[in-house]
Image 1 (cartoon, rainbow, N blue to C red):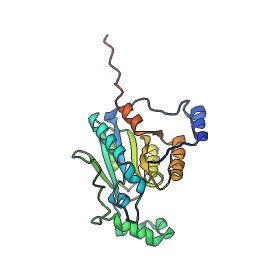
Image 2: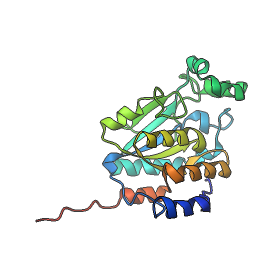
Image 3: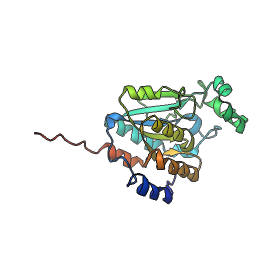
Image 4: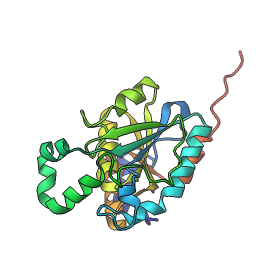
Length: 233
């Protein structure tokens, strides 16, 4: 598991100039909140595949605990996964030149029918969960997926984001979701990337403007906070 450490400068800035406190959310209305699990696919979790993220295997138990807690409290669970095509390779030109052989190998593992495309078999996916295919890093980028319409149709306005990579698909999804008027939480011990430094840089940046940064236990505790009872008059 990553050792999460939001930079002290960011923490001080948030408390003094942004919110007056570290976290925005004191409780969560589960009926309006979704757990969004990004790219927990075999391509990223199976040892030896070209896009393997070893730390992603470490967050599986936390994501599964969150999924169970969301369902138990009436929340939604959304499994977002990459689905690339040959058209993706032709249309998404800026991504390919950096390491064309490696990127091509990764993309091929995320095409339908490839070994790496399915969700990792240890993920706790059940009937009734939502599944959303995307073709870019951010699920909320216009044309990437239909996640926004699916969430809006269910009255969801708050997201707890988990998955891999913290600094790529998860961060991109979090930023665009906030810009589309969703409230966003990033689950620190439910996200994974290559190193602690990269993980913490991403979360620190997101913490200032885009998302609350919380642990699995903190999110579950907020889900379990009793809703205020109406006062009889």
